[in-house]
Amino acid sequence: MKTLMPINNYPPARSDWQKNRIKAAEIKKYLNQGNSFIDATTITQNLENTRNPDRVMVEDILQKSLEIETLSPFETACLLNVQEPELWERMAETAGAVKRKVYDNRIVTFAPLYLGNKCVNDCAYCGFRRSNHTIQRKILNQEQIRREIEVLVGKIGHKRLILVYGEHPETDVDYIADSIKTIAQVKVKTRKGGTTGIRRCNINAAPMQAAELAKLHQAGIGTYQVFQETYHLPTYEKLHPPGTLKGDYLWRLYCMHRAFEAGIDDVGIGVLFGLYDWRFEVMCLLQHALELENKFGIGPHTVSFPRLEPAANTSFIDNTSHKINDENFKKLVTVIRLAIPYTGMILTARESATTRMEILPLGCTQTDASSNIGIGGYADLFEGQQAERQQFILGDTRSLDTVVRQIAEAGYITSFCTAGYRCGRTGSNIMGMLRSGREGRFCKLNAVITFREWLDDFATEETRKIGEKLIAQEIQEIQEKLPEFYNQFVKYYDDTNNGKRDLYF
View 1 (cartoon, one colour):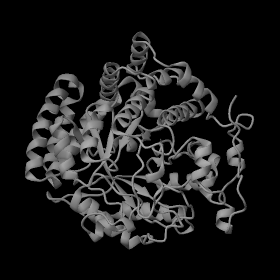
View 2 (cartoon, one colour; view 1 turned 90 degrees about the vertical axis):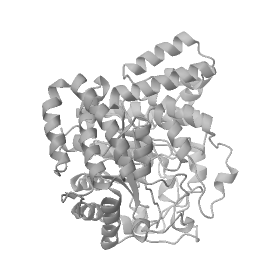
View 3 (tube, helix red, strand yellow; view 1 turned 90 degrees about the horizontal axis):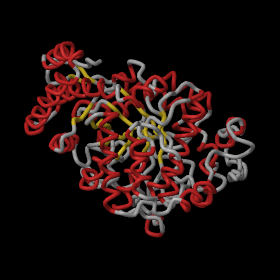
View 4 (tube, rainbow, N blue to C red; view 1 turned 135 degrees about the vertical axis):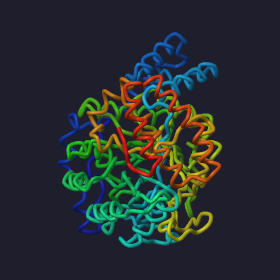
């Protein structure tokens, strides 16, 4: 029996803005006889009934994942209950193979840009919670946003951002749309005389109403990213006080449904691991993916798996009983890749550099670099981290150049490509291509071209030399495995080498 979820079970909001934010009708229309798609009882039963799965069963499940088919809850529970270290190694190898089949050996890089830290919510684990008076509150105006982009584009070389907004009337949908317009207007000259800029803006923002999401779609956002934080209702209610917008579990849970109906076809889901039992949360991420597949024919474009990190004047992390150690973190990443084999997986700079290099081969497709999450931190160029300006403390502050060089040494090519989004390879149009591995062909071609572009425009000499060795290997592979594209690829590659920019398949 599914767990009944309350709707708007908190007292009236303190302001008209908050009181009018949540539309109960935009939740009820998706419920099944008053129940949500998170079936906590069945999750618990599956985890109990699949203890100590045998190797034959696990191998069959791995083969299904290699065929790029979404696993069932029962199959995913089996993987979560594996005990033998050798079998976990086999699962890790398969996770890497699944990633390569779908996305080839590319890693997409991006930068987070926090545009404001004012927030009406009071989440126990968050440095930006409204009751935390040690935080320096600030919302960037359009000129300050422009200066941030000039650094991100002109000095670092980023092409893709995740924009992060607190839930506050000063960072409403109109502010978000204006910020995206501002970012699109910034163009910077490159070493070879061309111009470059940000080509894709994904956003991490609060759940919105369907009409607002339609406005964001018209503004040209990329992926709309909202994390449930924890799918475990009692924990969610404990950590998100009644009387706050975030206290409404269902409003957040169904925000991706509203996004799809508003025309946004790339959505990102995630969990803040460390709030509740990690096995339960992985099962819920799968249920969320299956729900979206069943309702809209499109699963999540990305899944994120950040771990809880320290934050200024925030003692929650010291008291939680659900901290995730490195061993279990590797396990949960492995199972997510196997359970939702088509999805992109985002590994963030919350983790240390060492941890990120260990987790990357388990199926990750995106990672950030040169990350600064202090409000206005890129333009200010301050050294180190300033806790009073940040939501949490980063584990890895390596430069983009260093990250590119080190992952190239590990055999991964950094892709700055955003072609698929501009060619219509999004949403339902890309699902079949991902499952068949066809999208990986475009990924390889565009990864090499955009990598060449970035090496010429931004790389240090050391990174450029290492990158060019990798490019030579990639070109040989293109000639052998993608002969039908080779002549056009060579033309685009040579044109890029001669200073043309933003060429893609």
